[in-house]
Amino acid sequence: MNHDIHDFIRRSQRELQEEYVRIQKRASEDPGTAGDQGEENWATLFREWLPHYFHVITKGRILTDTGYASPQMDVLVLYPSYPRILLDKKLYLSGGVAAAFECKTTLTTRHVVEAVETSAALKDALPKREGSPYKELNAGLIYGLLSHSHSWQAPSSTPVDNIEKTLWEADLRTVKHPRECIDFVTVSDLASWKVAKMTYLSPRLDFYNDDMKRIYGPEGSATTAYVCHAIGGDRQKDYFSPIGVLLGGLFSGLSWTFADMQPLEEYFRKVDLLGSGQGQMRLWDINIYSEGIRDRVYRGQLTNGIPYDEWAVAF
Image 1: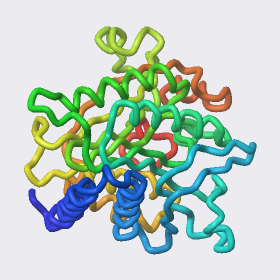
Image 2: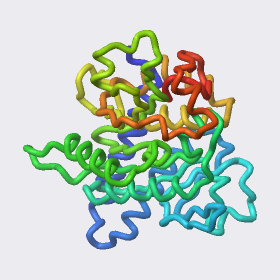
Image 3: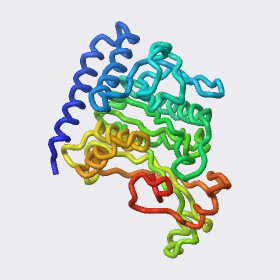
Image 4: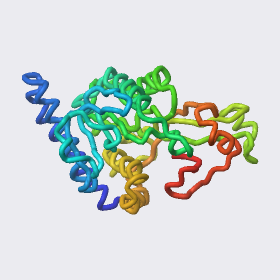
């Protein structure tokens, strides 16, 4: 059903689109300023929708404990505990970064490829977490690519297909472990892609039949997928907005650390903020997991339907 929250989300989307039109009028005169204005649009969105205790800042690199420094990020969401004395240093300690985003006004193929490469390099440089499927499948820092619009505007163009193909090929070429996947690709006037991860479907499970063996292999598989939630897609409601996918997904990711966000995250799910979506699966073998949890995962000792359980069947 159409809920008031959908109206608020669509208003935020309209404001982004109005800003895009305004920015584009003078983008050719000063591309740098146009880019800065676009980044500030997204920063404003997060300041308005995320809990007030986060620090939302623009422009900065992420520094890991190994000394790796990321390319410049356009918008960063910092933990409330981040030292105030360091907020303007523009080299942000990875342990205090909750989420980071690249922002583009008009998305191109190259932007998608570079964002996937950045995600893989950054998350590979973060400390490897062990002890549960949730920890080992997720890097602990959310990273995404945001854009007001896209470059495929001709009547015969297929922007959703173009982005999906580029995202899939870049993932296969660059991502070496599920924790390295980019978390979001959001194009405000088109669609949002949100990563989904399934812990493992094991041949030890009672329901693992021949059909599943053909899909997941004789030894089973974990899976990742970039689920596309597109405007006008199959079964999509008129009130759907890609911004809802971004915000609902961001609340979901942050709620693992910030428990006070969990009731709203549940609310967003109940009112169908993410809409419907679909995506192609990539299969991973059991060796993506550490020896400490591999046997339990392979035996299928996972939970289903328990919120924020680190041993869940899917994330």
